[in-house]
Amino acid sequence: MKEKSTKGIWKVISASSMGTMIEWYDFYIFGSLAVVISTKFFPADNPTAAFLATLATFAVGFVVRPFGALFFGRLGDLIGRKYTFMVTLLLMGGATFLIGCIPSYETIGFMAPLLVLVLRMLQGLALGGEYGGAATYVAEHAPVGQRGYWTSWIQTTATVGLFISLMVILATRNVLTPAQFDEWGWRVPFWVSIIMVGVSYLIRKNMDESPVFAKAKSEGKTSTNPLQESFGNRYNLKFVLLALFGATMGQGVVWYTGQFYAMSFLKTVMSIDSSQVDTLLGIALILGTPFFIVFGWLSDKVGRKYIMMGGMLLAILLYRPIYKQMYETTSVKNKTEIVANTKVVSELKENKKQTMDSIYTTNKEYTDGTTFLEVKTVSLENGIAKIVDGKPKIETKTTININWDDKWTLIFLIFIQVIFVTMVYGPIAAFLVEMFPVKIRYTSMSLPYHVGNGIFGGLLPAISTYFVINAKEAGNPEFYLEGLWYPIVIAAVSFVVGMIYIKNKDKNAHI
Image (cartoon, rainbow, N blue to C red):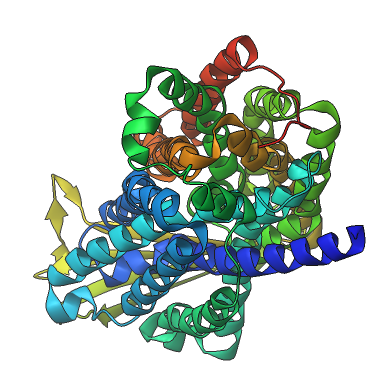
């Protein structure tokens, strides 16, 4: 009998996980390609502003997630878990595919960023309904006393989705030339998602409804107004707010710092070659992902609270030392240049606007095998440097290729951050499911999860990057660490609230 139930839960896990993984893949493609996208859908006059605008557009997808949680959570509590997250899958996949079809800013002007914004909002709405459905569906199939273990498999899907997105991008870059990838190849990962969505839809179509929800529905115990019962009831609202401020808010910023901000930091602040960064992150994620299962399983033994709070505390204390070490590891100021091998080439080149640019290319080599490439583009007007805001318009792009010793150091430092992620994220699905009754569970757990992850977590790349840029312009020698204040403060507030008000509930209780 136990073997049969285990086989059944694996079927549920695989069907739920594949769909969730694909939705996260779709979502991450945009973030992983943010640097490239900023040059395609936004004006090229100001690269920094374009990159920030891309991050802001990325963040919009997170901001609308709570609205998706409300809309699809209500549907899930009214008509069922299965059909609701089939709709979210198709909506997400369709929006992703269409982003890959939008013409560039040069072709259709401001319609390009506008269309991207609309599709990002649809992605966010779909994702807002996806996670709560998948987590609830698995938890309601899981045996008592094992919900942390089984739901932690769902938690791995977000990281697996990110990993696959990185691998697809890497494969596309390797197959195409840099010019081909820049011209049209970046669209391929968006198009590929539609195939995976089709496969996932066929798998989900054959799933049964959650037995807990089906029983409640047959007994007439489902909610007629899930929104009113979730947020109009003061007793239940208290748990919604506690879940948000004591758990998901801190979990959200730890998650996005360890995986997304780390990637953005390596590419934009440390100027490491994009393909190298994707490889480093991919290796760290492979090494770290099994710990979602470890900490989910452990939460069944010792409770959810202390594992999640421990992850937050470690992040608060160690983020600044970790990022300082990351930056110092590859800083060329700490390396010995082979001066005889330094090459500087200057040339005049016509740009896309059919005006001339003066381009200075500098190649440097260092004794440890590190290489440094700097391309400085000076825009010319009537043969002299163009003045914008009282300064010559100069665009500098730096690319650093690092050696394997530095690579393994960075992999280890990212891996540590992924461990923090697994501690806060592994037990969270079971924790949220256990907080709310079955008739309003989809709605009640989805909102705090998506506000914590969507708003507090999703805004992190844009806010932290903005802090770093401001600190750099102000001449702060440790400008690269300023972006960490946002996740540290948010996680600290969540840690204090969680330690004081959250109880280490009985993980063997029936739901």
